[in-house]
Length: 161
Image 1 (cartoon, one colour):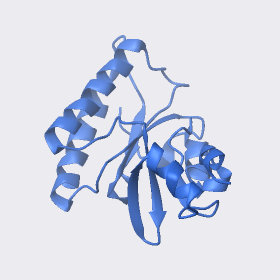
Image 2: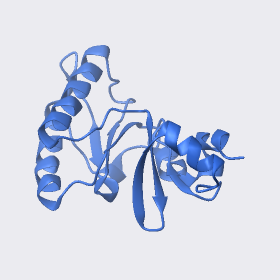
Image 3: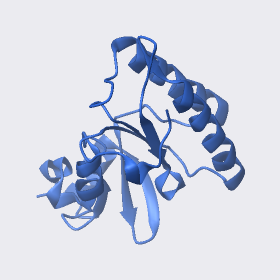
Image 4: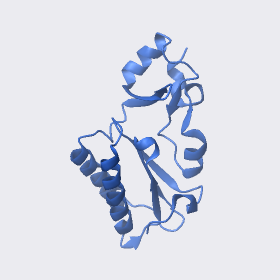
C-alpha cells in the first residue's frame, strides 16, 4: 500500500539507489508510474507493505517501508532488487553499484568511482565540507537528517585528511 512519504514513521526503513546520471523529465514521469505500480503490489508473504518513495534531485530513488506494520522478507527484498534491476536495464543506468560516490561540486552532481573519490581527497579537490550523499542511512529519520551531509560528517570522512 502506497502512502505519502511524509506520512511514514521516522523508523521506516529506507533503501537508497543512486543513479549514474539524472533522469530526464520524461523518464521521471515514467519512473513515477513504475514505482507506484510496484509499491502498490509489493507484498511480504501475501501481506501488503506500507511503502512510499521519493526521487530527490532526479538522481536517486528512495524506497521506504513501515516495518512496524509489516516487515520485508527475503522474497519481498528480492522482488524489489529485481524491480530496480529492470529499471537499470530499461533506462540504461546504474542504480545498484555501491562502489561509486555521488557528491556535489557547487550545483553540479558528480557520480565518482570510490577509488577516484579517494584520489580527489588526497589531491584536496574534495574536502570535509564537500557535500556527499550517505546512502547507508537505515531509516527515514536518518535519511532526513544524515543523508545529504558534508563529507566530514559521513563515512566518507575516512578518505579526507
